[in-house]
Length: 176
Ligand SMILES: [Mg+2]
Image (cartoon, rainbow, N blue to C red; front, top):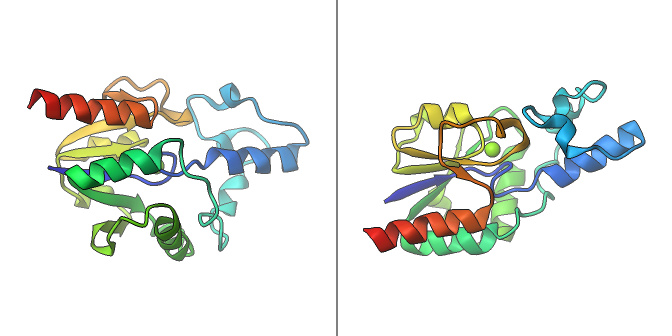
């Protein structure tokens, strides 16, 4: 069974850095509820935040999403796990993401890392992703990892955090 796992806003916690940038630029902390249903850089006055993603190093030092390391490692030991991340839009993200994986997910073999643009090229049985458009073109079962921009989506089983992902696959293997 092949499971495709996204990086940004799924394995990687991008929000802490976004919140730091918001506070640096706006002089006050952001209320996370103010950007429910959209990306933080769609808030007025900070649209330029998305340009930060183009800078070398942006993706290198982001923290690991809570419980991601433990659960991804557990899944990796049981299933054919691939890390599938859209990287081609931001050229420096290649090295940053490679080094991030080497540091935080050292058990992931390089053959299991897919840097792509359009994820519809990837096939598998499950895809864990925060972006509905990636799940919509996936041939298998999509699992929607909760992110600010997808809180109103209802079309896929929702994973609020990594412990829910762990439970989902534990129940799946128990029922098989
Ligand atoms: Mg993502």
